[in-house]
Length: 69
Image (cartoon, rainbow, N blue to C red):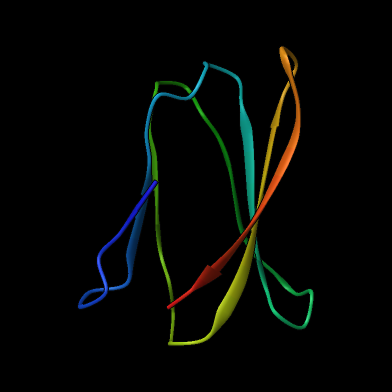
């Protein structure tokens, strides 16, 4: 996972195809969801703050990460 602190671009790499990735605000509002068709996905964070990233893949347990931008 890479976060460009200047632009707010969040990149996730080495994902399995068909992985679902959800991005939530710190208030629990869904900001975006991506169904990966390749091995990477990108979100643009709308503003500085805290975010929660949920990664769901059939091959692995659900992964939850907190992001600070």
